[in-house]
Length: 271
Ligand code: ADP
Ligand code: MG
Image (cartoon, rainbow, N blue to C red; front, side):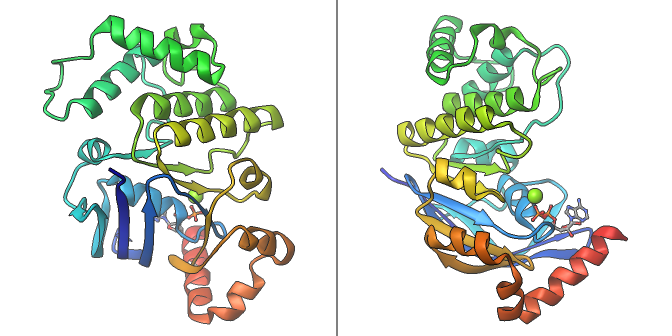
C-alpha cells in the first residue's frame, strides 16, 4: 500500500529563533519532488526537522505518515516509520565498517521490535543482499570493508548514502544537496542510483538542490520553491527552467514579507 507523508503548517525554532514558518508539503510514495531556494532559506532545517533533530523545537504544525504524527518520535523511530535522510551520518565512525554499519541500520529498520545488540539480520542473507546491491549500483565490493566515511572522497560518501538508501528501502527519502561538490561522472552515477532505488522501493523522494543539471538527471514531477522559511511556490518542471533563467528576484518581489524574513535570517547567519 502506498504511503503519504504530510507536512502541515510546520514551524520550527532553533535556540528560540523561528527558522521554519509554516511549511506545507505532501509527498506520496513513488513521487519525486524537487525543493529549490536561496541559501539560508531553511531547506536543510526542514530536512533535519523531518528526521527529528534533537535540538529543534517544533512549535506548531505536524509531520505525518498515513495520519500518524512523527513529531514525538526519535530519529530511529522515524527511520522505522519509513523516512530516510541522506547525510544522517556525515562524520566518520572509528572502527565501524560500511558493511557493519549497514547491517545494524537495516536490522533496525526491518525489525522494529529489535533491541540494541540483538537480532541482527543473519550475516549470510545480509552479505548476499549487500553484494547484489553493490553490483547493481556499480560500487566496488571492497568498499563494504572500509571504515565508514574515513578518508572517503566526496563521491564515495554520496555513493555510501545511495547504497544505504538501497539497503534500507525507505518509503520516503530526503536528499539534501546530494549532488553538491561532485564531478560530472559522480553526479551521473549518483543520479542513476537514486532513480534505480526510487523506482525499486517506490520511494517518495525529496531532492534538495540548486542545479538544473541534476534535475535533468533525476526529473521531478513536482517542484517547490522555499523562501523565508516556507514553501512559497508549487509547480512542475517548468519552475526549474524559470529559476534558471530569472533567478529568485521575482520571488523576492512577489513575497515581500518572506523577503524580509530572508534578510533577517541572513543577518543572523553572519552575526
Ligand atoms: P538552507 O539549507 O536553505 O541553505 P538552512 O536550513 O541551513 O538553510 O539555514 C536556515 C537558517 O537557519 C539560517 O539563517 C541558519 O543560520 C539558521 N540555522 C540553521 N541551523 C542553525 C543552528 N543550529 N543554530 C542557529 N541557527 C541555525
Ligand atoms: Mg542547506
